Length: 131
Image (tube, rainbow, N blue to C red; front, side, top):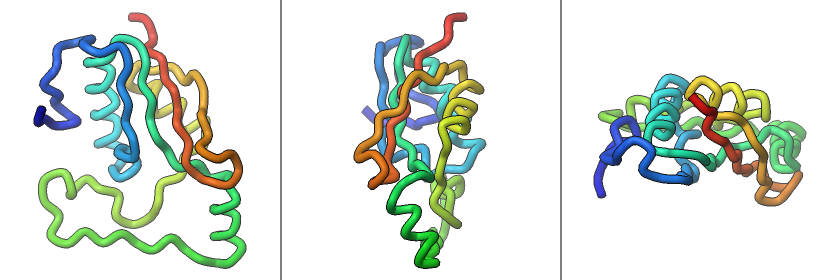
């Protein structure tokens, strides 16, 4: 199946559960908001989204050693690449995740840490709000 995150070729509510793994964090806020709304359209109940979390040993070591995350460079941005976050790694707090989902009608349920306090990778479970 080919499609766009902004216009998925599926019916409204076609899936009970959808997953976005290592995808949204590459895009700017406007693109993510539109993609979240499209995920809400095709999903009946749950959405699981990967985020990078600011509280981890990895992030602490980056701050302590003064190692800045290298800038991302996108040569000749076209199509979806024009919306990519190219300057820094996006880190999200629980509150920011909840707010991002709420705009598209998702309720924050729970965080699942890949390796608590060591890795900055986390998965956020959202549930679709009634209405």
